[in-house]
Image (cartoon, rainbow, N blue to C red; front, side, top):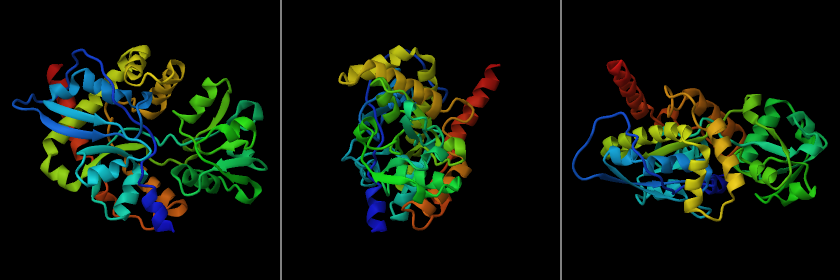
Amino acid sequence: MRATRAKARLVCVTLCIGLTLSCNHGPVGPKTTGEPAQLSFRLKWFIYSSFAHHLVAQEKGLYRSENLKVDIKPGGANVDPIKTVAVGEDDVGLASYAQILLARQEGVPVVAIAEEYVKSGVVEFSLKKSGIARPQDFIGKRVGIIPGSDTGTVYGALMAKLGIDRSKITEVTIGFDLTPLLTGAIDVSSVGYISNQPVVVETQGYPVNIVDPHDYGVRPGGNVVFTTEENLRLKRDPLKRFLRAMIEGIELSRQLPDVEVVDLVLKYNPSLKRDSEMRVWEVTKDYLLSKDPGSTGVMPDDTWTQTADIFNRFGDLRQVPALKSCYTNELVNEILAERQNAKGAAS
């Protein structure tokens, strides 16, 4: 049963992109000539503002400056980036730290090569009028969970970390539907990501209280860029150029006016609502993306260790794989060192 759930968890359920813009903002790095190298990049979810920075890299010419032609493909409920990359349909993709660990457990030879989000974004949230503001307030309340999911795993880790007796909480199995919270069927939802469900609830006119497990010392990793071991050997140079453009895209997206970034998203997904997308982008920029140009993209060793421990103790990670086989910071460290050297030479 646990093995089945572990494989099921490899289905990516979080977020994605595919937008446009234009201007000149070239990355720091050696220019390349000849035909552009082509890379297929699979994202985690449908187009919305949490991934606008990738399209900034695309449409501001950052990939083009690296002599790359990048095909950014959206994910979705029935699209598993780990599978599409593993079978060669895509060259590179997005997944969480935990999904990489679970894939390695199943013998899938994927390897993370850069960090996208500095934290998982998994949160618990309640309507502000409930007065539930801390994990300790969950006692005696009805908490919605998805057992075996990443949100359920993080919730379990948070309760254990704080020594909260879960038998004193009424745990209700729910899905991603917000109706149980809005109708009062539950008091707290543990099924949420900081840039998604709480934003939707608030834009519907219901202020919320957010409990971020990260604030209580439960700190699983966020999203990473990954490829296969074979791709890393055979396509190392274009992958490095791809990461350099991505890092520049994160930084440039911070500099652009928020409305410009959101307008880009709406251009590619007109069904989205401007108000909620503005908030999604603000949260993404403030909570999920790196604010330190000197470390953007670096995957901390401790984040891998903590994520492995959480999912081994409370999730479907039956045996922790050799962590050094799961990721490498080599490309990102080279990029950051080159950027630093370029700044030194210019000063």
